[in-house]
Amino acid sequence: PVYGFERIVDPPPLDVDVGRLLDEFGNGRVTVGDEWRQALTAENAETVERLSADAHRAVDEATRADTPSGLEQSDFHFPDETWARVIYDMAVAHSARTLDTQRLVTSLIPLYFGRVASLILETRELTTDQAEAFIERQAVAFELAKPYLVQRWRTLDTAGAQRQVVPTSVAG
Image (cartoon, rainbow, N blue to C red; front, side, top):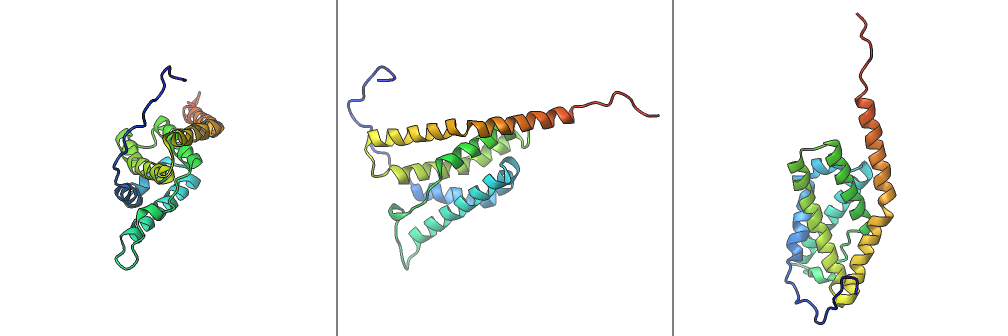
């Protein structure tokens, strides 16, 4: 109704390798962990590293020969609020030129994989309509995190203005 058309049939199911997504996210701690620590606030970097370790552990448990559990039983979850704050941190890092754009984008890839894996695991038993409500929940998380972005952006603007102050006189 919002877009002027009504969905008559559900989209076909997608075959996604959740294990690979979680593995790539888990490996992100090693491959781009330094970039995460530079671009994200300390609290968010710590949360992302913990989530990355959780992803690695979920893959390990699912692939162990002695007690294979399968990823279907995984309770891995990348919270909406954390995702919103990570994306906002990355936007601030880009504006501040904390990292080269290529390195920043590269560091986002494992994070994206972790978020997608979480969404798949959390929506696997939902109907299409329920999954759409789930996605709406993510949009609300971004709206609710907007004050966080504004605060970070203002801090960035203040820091930038202080760095650009040029002395009016030089002793000599």
